Image 1 (tube, rainbow, N blue to C red):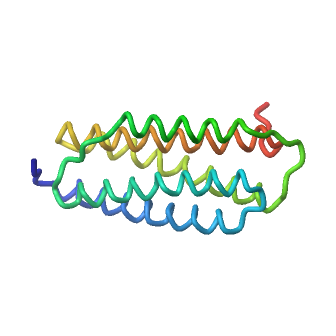
Image 2 (cartoon, rainbow, N blue to C red; image 1 turned 135 degrees about the vertical axis):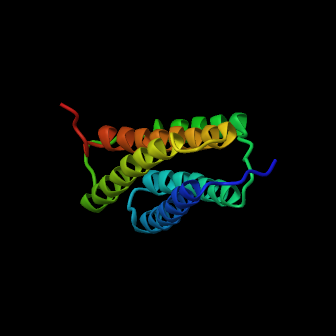
Length: 157
């Protein structure tokens, strides 16, 4: 089904596209810079999701309402969670902590932008796709938070 996007919807999607392109780039670079192999894997896993988000946004920009494969997404999320629980350390590398902080801030920002966008779309399927992506962005933030917390990088008081 093809949807005629409003000018505002197009502008919001262009912003999301730019954000997702930046996320893909940041996670790729972070994976290359990270010292902890577990963290490298986490960055690679989340980066793959960000690429999927970019593909979805591009599909939406072409007027197509994406179909979200939630069973596959849930399995990928469960795999990331299992990988995160495999090791816990007290000491951490300062470079890894900086990378995590930067990406956690990015996830917080992009999630809030998706939240705003969701309310601006007229098509229910488009809103659902944006909501799905936002949920995954929040899960990415949770994965980063859990890693940071378990490695002494983040102490919520």
